[in-house]
Image (cartoon, rainbow, N blue to C red; front, side):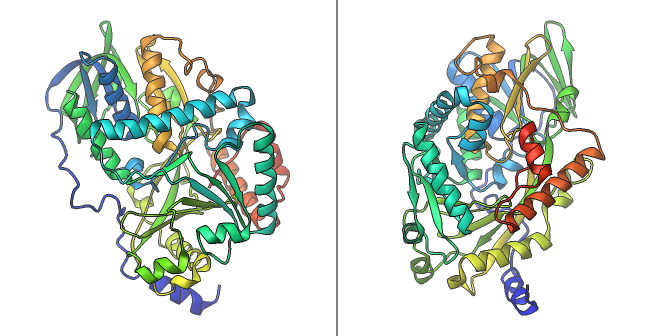
Length: 472
């Protein structure tokens, strides 16, 4: 990278605020007061992100008489649920290739459940009057290398052979550039119905409002410190009080679980994003993008990008940073060296947008598991349920996970709980220094594959055979 180019790209970051764009909103609601007494309830939900909020909301919709309390350690949506790219995908398996590789016998059912889940999200937004800029535009996976274009075409043909290509269209170079004009695009695969774009933070805030309207008692700035049996139920201790509940649903995801034995199944991976200033009419015309799809490129170290309602471009991904020891710390949320790298990649993709400035640059932790898709379980004789491991694709899948947790707490056999995906867990991560060493080797190998026509070395092929890996 030439120094002059680096200076040009880093200048675009000179006014970028190190805060998530979505949370920098004058409509951000005030937090609810912290819990300062003892509470009792039928169901306690721990975690005020998508996972917890969907669980509380659906619990009340299933049984309006159920007494539900939700506690959140800071403010609802402050972590991954308010920092993500706003891609709300139908996929429950972190994409069809991952699901097909792991659960080939269930893949059609998983695809069906995923579409039904996305439909249910759209219906919930309408039913509860949640305005979060929901647009069911679909997503285009784009190829920026010749080998990726061939892989996309081959994959589309395989999808068709397996009767999994409904609503998915292959785009050659001309067709994909007609949708979004980048000189780097060589092909695309457009999933027309399986992905929606939305405003992540407004979804959280809308879910919180809907929960409270249905009678859920929400306490913010109330971290759950410990969980233990208490009579016929459970007790969760907080800094200024406690909650006694018949059942508990844990939606803490990237943060250490109150169940110690669950902690080794996830690690935190830090992801970063930039947001541009609003584009002018001329700038928008130069890139097309009239159908406002979400986009992601096809490299191992990939970017995701989309338009906001006010015509900004969110540009994120590529670097996936695992901190040694798996610690979640605020100091990791800001990484200027990654912002500079992302800015350079942005202007390589869209050279016609030279001169555009970035207004926000931020990062945050994603809970990653070894199979890249959520896992589920129960504890304390079925009185505690948990879901975690969404690996960056939880905007939509967390609603499905909420239903799984509620099914498990009810002791019901449903089409969800019968899934192998629900009944089996991923392999746990090894202790340090093995985890850090393995992840570093995998990241190096993925970057090497991107630079050598997608060819996977022995380490990656071994990880593939074991069903393991590390996704950017």
